[in-house]
Amino acid sequence: MLKSLPHQPTFQIKADRDSFLLIVSGGIALEDILDDLRKKLMESRGFFQKARMILDLRERVFNADEVQLIRTLLEDVGGIELHEIRLGENLQSFLTWASGLLGIAVSVPALNHGAGAFFREGNSAPGRDKDRHNAPLVVRQTCRSGMRIESPAELIILGDVNPGAEILAARDIIVFGTLRGIAHAGIYGDRSAKIWGLHIEPQQLRIADVLAVPPQGKTTRPKRYEVAEVHGDRIRVTRF
Image (cartoon, rainbow, N blue to C red):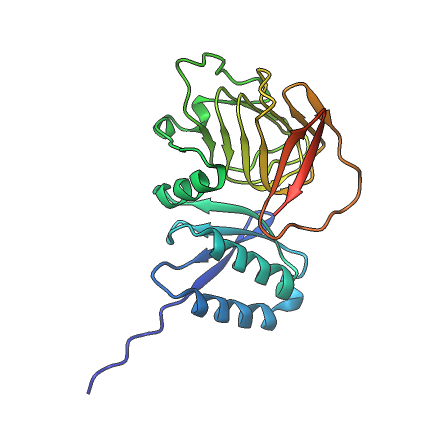
């Protein structure tokens, strides 16, 4: 008689400092993951209510549509805020999606140097030598209060930008999380630069010489992402 194979878990949830870590398994249909996650959230609704969750995709290929479906399920069923996404070493699927989103090629030849080679906590980062550092700077962590990160090209943050953190870039800024700190794109005067984020709720936005301070109060979360760009002499945030 053939023995049935044990059921492979579709995900794991672990405690992670002041939040929870949702580790999604690879090689499993998204429908099965969503079904099991929905059951877990329904069973533990009171426990996870108003919690913060980190989505860990190190075992799974990045897919923006999957991320959005998981995020919506966490928010609608569990009352959980998805505030950070962690990716594995292979960023090809992520970079392909980012290239399509921006309409420009995105590569990360400088990844092997690590984020620590480009910024220091509490100080301005080196990187004004445009000829030497012209690749996007990728930071694989949440930017906490007191951090100041500067890129001579595009800046990609794989996490949140907390209040009190400051991020600057010569070109676009892309935040795969919630932007609540200070962001300045186009720091050398490029008004065509943009600021992208899954949710933009900053202390201050600047693009080139144009400054914007958003109104206070909670805003409705976007379906997919938000983009801040210059229109005339003002910065406008568009939701998609």
